[in-house]
Length: 333
Image (cartoon, rainbow, N blue to C red; front, side):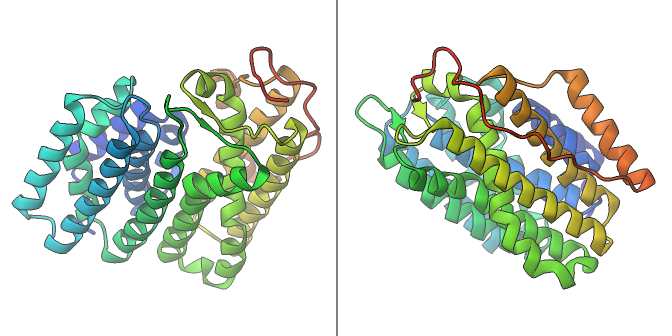
């Protein structure tokens, strides 16, 4: 991988800030080349997430966009960084997507318009990193297509069972956890001895983060036609699953730390998990939809940095109890 010019680094960070405040905060903690690799990987997954969420489009249009995007990644990998044909194909497809924007979010629309640039960054990554991204983006896009197929005539998706919830979280987040783990192992030689243990926890780590997002965004998702809290599952069971997953996430991170992984790699994972743990506590105490304040986020970031500097424990996972009640305005039993 050649070093990314500073103008491209700035543009990548700007897109992260417009599409995910959390990852815009945590990705810069990573060492290079992981910082660029995971920044690009996040944007690739954010593009397919946008198509999965695109309730303004008919299911067939959403499925086609998912297929077309994966095909663009194939073209880029096959032809290399300087192939003008691949770049022109990406521009044409992006222009088509934006003629009828799939979603009402300025940052996501801007990201779709920058698809050619994102794919250009992807082309310049190392071949092993590209292979991991290509494999996992395709698997996630295929799973998303299955859930697009499950939307009803009004564009509404409703999960029914715990099996549905596990499968959905795997498609949109567990696969990401698997990919990130492979990128970590590729990048940091200290992790070879614990790679199997990390892989055994990667899916739970991703699922735990996704469950917290589902609980936090339950109200806004329902307004947009997406009900991810299964109607056949008690809310307390979802909290119990999230707690168990986040405990596995803390084990994952302590393994990174004990193996001697780069400090920035540990910090990236530790802050993502700390934010999820703190949010889950808040959701338990305040109800669905509650969110951390910026001072609370800053305090957690400071705690992670201090703990890594002086060797203190990173996590206190006690007290993640069951929720008091569903938030007003949700129809979940």
